[in-house]
Image 1 (tube, one colour):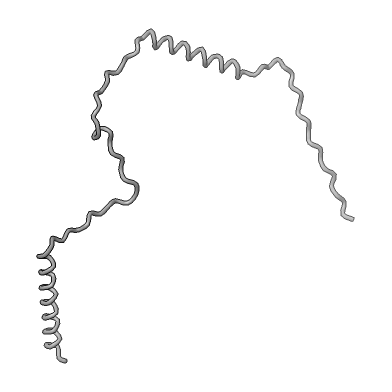
Image 2 (cartoon, helix red, strand yellow):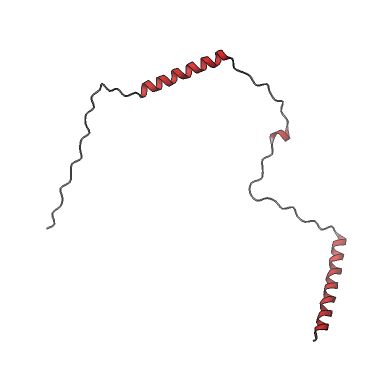
Length: 106
C-alpha cells in the first residue's frame, strides 16, 4: 500500500465518522452533565426560605449596666478571696524519699 491509498482510506473514515456525528447530534440535543462539587452541600440560608422581620434591639440603661458591673466585681472579689492562701498556718515539710540500698554483686 502506498501513502496515497492510506491517506484516502483515512479521509473516507473521517467523512464516515463526521456523518455519524451529524446524525447523532441532529436527533437529540447533547448536553453536558452539570458537575457537582465535591464534599458536603452548602447550607440553604434561612433568609431565602422565610425572611424575618428584624426586631428592634433593646438598649440597656446606664443604671442597669452599673448594677451588673458591681455584681460581677463582687463575684470576682469572692473568688479571689477564696483562692488567697492563708500564710498563718504552719505547713509540715514533705517527707523525703529514702534511697534504696544498692545490691551487691555476688
